[in-house]
Image (tube, rainbow, N blue to C red; front, side):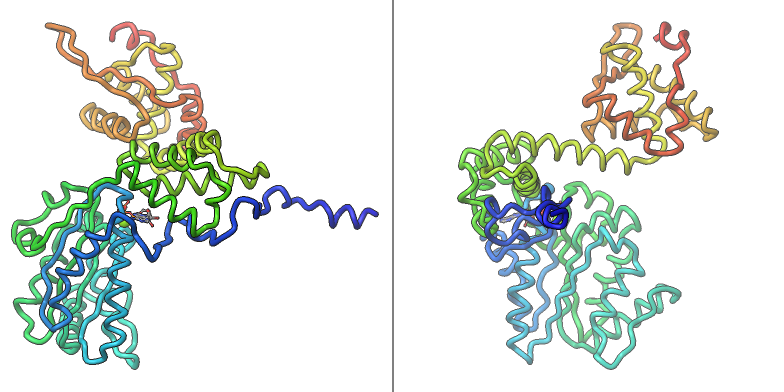
Length: 421
Ligand SMILES: Nc1ncnc2c1ncn2[C@@H]1O[C@H](COP(=O)(O)OP(=O)(O)OP(=O)(O)O)[C@@H](O)[C@H]1O
Ligand SMILES: [Mg+2]
């Protein structure tokens, strides 16, 4: 009897996938999934293909920079174009064309970039290049030699190229772009993708003029477009029958308001499927989408806070603690700085300047964790007034997970600093 009961009830039952909701491919709701069809990005894919066409007859295609806010399909469209191009390459043996994809969010240093390109150009019989230790010039010379030996066109797709430039400067781009001027046999083109529209400000004019031969901007999606994307994904993952149309529309509307980000829409849908399965529901309705929205926001805040640098965490904690004491009235930058200094002293690190803390508060505002406005006090000047934009208790709890911050639980502002400001 006991055995039977054990067989009937399993600890994991509650978490088991409820087939009443999902009848197709679960992977269609995965963050990294690239579908065969990308609705509303057909013209962008065609435009890239058009620019790359000369490479099919041995000509170097123009370098391209692709811009667009997060989640507007840049990576997916590029992967789709690469897939299509590789299908052509696979059928035309005489075609000397190689496409190398590098995620500069992961590989953000010159050595890594050159190593990646070099390793893609090795013959089957050759050993991989050493992943560390060579002087960069030696590595570059080997890469240039490999490109020449290949004697065709190498297209290097650099996704999140802004991360490389911000982390390591544009030296390696300069070297790569100059290959076409110094090599005779092989040619190289770069396709750079970035969601930071200002990243080209960081480029040396010599790099900028060579790199930006063609520019493509992906606009944000509107609600109707996101709805179409979601419908496609629902169809493929087999949740369409168990999803209210109004829920899909709501999901699309929320994501459209949030910068037209398709990733956010798909995340919302995936989380609502998971919630439905957990609760053993048969339908995905509007309420579930709202619940998924709350969960997603909580997840994003958790991730954002855990990855903040120490001084940003201390500044944020100071704002939370002051908000607690002042019960809703705004906090001045002076008060924040004062408490921040007390906190840094307590844990034995030196304080940053008021200017840097003002920058940090600006960053926390951009992340949506706090609100700040500049308030004028007539002839007494102006100051930034700060308030919480999210549940203070929750933020404090997340900050306390950092051991150094845990020591600051009871740090208090001096009465003097509060009354003076
Ligand atoms: N037109 C589309 N059709 C179907 N799915 C799409 C479309 N556009 C984006 N997606 C999906 O949305 C998610 C985000 O897209 P993608 O990663 O391509 O965005 P991105 O522009 O590269 O964003 P980021 O700047 O953050 O890297 C992916 O899961 C992708 O499959
Ligand atoms: Mg991307």
